[in-house]
Amino acid sequence: MLKHDLVYLTEDATHDAVIELINDEAFGPGRFTKSSARIREQGPHDRALSYVCCDDGETIASVRMTPVLAGSVKGHLLGPLAVRPSHKNRGIGRELVRIAVDAARRKGSEAVILVGDAPYYMPLGFEKVAYNALTFPAPTDPARILVAPFAPDTHSRLKGVIAWRDKAVEAEAVERLLKSA
Image (tube, rainbow, N blue to C red; front, side, top):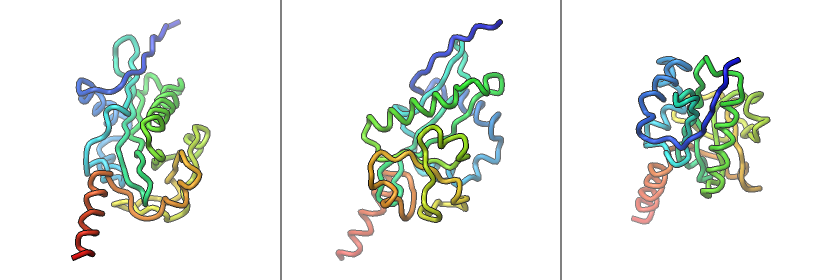
């Protein structure tokens, strides 16, 4: 029997190359065309809320969190979440999600949003977002948009565009300036 020594760590720059390999292995080159990737291209993810799992020193899984403004909710976009094939179906992905969501909540995030499979994520505290409530930068199946809300009014405020938070805040400021001119 193989003994696994799993350790969960906050991501740092030394993990970048292996995370790219793991994501390529899990999703292939088509991952860059997805709507979530369009948001992640707008600005950097939050390394303080992004995690890896290592087995005996080898990085075998990761999850990233990107700051977003979703309607009026200041939250985080979870993903990509990927686990090497050799370590799938052992609860590693679920543990990474749990760690990342808890960290986002502690940091003051209002919600964690993702595009994913409801049967996998709903037992982890995610709920479906109202159909067509959020507009992504590329076509997205509205039935796959999920949220882990941290406030009672989160769902009512998830209406409008979702974008990388700093870019969204800058766009709002420009819009206010133009309206006041």
